[in-house]
Length: 602
Image (cartoon, rainbow, N blue to C red):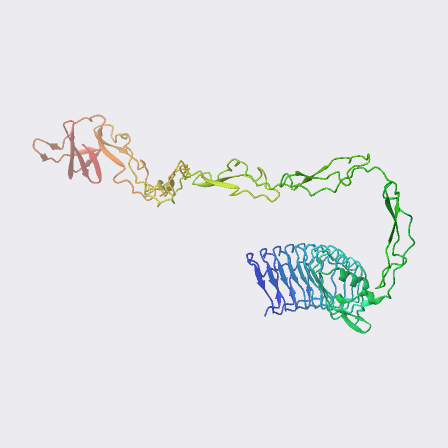
């Protein structure tokens, strides 16, 4: 059971046409809960517990046509609460507790044609409270507590056809408050306590077909509504329902004779007036004088004046010339045209009387003409030439364009036929294929890096096939290949020897010596885990700057025998133990002599 309609609870239902919230326990409607229901046409909220229609609660219902809010507990409708309901056609507020129709709360309901306020507690209809309802055709105020309708309160309801104010407490129908209701067909005043209907109070109801005054007969006196009954009797086409009282008798209003309300008055003649001019100046004429039955005039069933109102006598009886006199004109001849303005004529003769005794001939003409069939002839509509073609709906791929003509050559008039066929012609256009700009596929996987270390490059590619360019469309922008750096870590560098440097200084200044040359492991140096250089960083070679004097030999090559020789090395004598031959330079035998911790050269 729904108890309230909260703000924005109906968001998202913008296509809704009908909303039924009837027969719940709704007591209040929040501000703007229907703001998104711009297409809603019918809203049912009857038989709930709503006490008032507050300003803003119906905001946004610009397409609403019917609002059913009867059988609630509404006591008031705030001014402005119905603003924006410009499309509303039917408003049902019956069976509530509304006490008055406030000025302004119906402003803006220019499309309203039916308004139900049945069975409320309204006591009066104030001047201006219904202002602006120019389209209203049906107004139901029955079964309220209305005692009076202010003069001018119904002004502006020029389209109203049905007005039901039955079952109220109205005591009189006063002159003026129904003025302006020229379209009213049905007026229901049944079940009130009407005692009088003022003379002229219904004069403006020129279209009235039915008037219901039933259940007023206990209070409505026939002779108290004489002018009203006279109006009814003159309106023979109006269906009058109801009775009135006359001399303790109930009689149908339409059948009551108002003359029963006044004593009869017999008519009386005035004195004769002076004699009129004689009808002829000679030959015997007639003259007359008159009186009127106005002294007094007959009234209320009284007798008319007896005898005649005119007295005649002969005059100017001497003979005289007879001037010709025209007969009456004969009938009009057939019009020369059936529409668009023709001419017809009729004739008379100078025989009434014919001229005699020197009398004049008839003056003027024997023929009279007049315009006839002056109504415009029907003009059938004719098309203008088609205008230029409008811009094609598409620039390629097949569109539609149209051109128009108007039914103004000439426009139909005076009941003539409208132009046949259509005012618009369409054709296909721009049927060539649309250019399709090329689109890249996604990039493929990255290719293998060009190096395993030390910074390489790898790439990936895409193709211009998503879609491929066609029909003159642009090729894909930018490149089909994307590159990036890879394997940027340093590669291991293995050490490598430089070339040997120059030989060093010979170890002896004469005789066979030794010299060195070196190299470094810097070509390149080992790095990033690379191997060190293999081998020695120096090379040893023999050298001899010059020969030393040769006076001693310990080895005789020819015999190949060792000999013991005493040698004096620095004044010391060393016993030779081992001789190690090394090499033969320049035809000499060279040895290292090792003994007693001395190494000497021989």
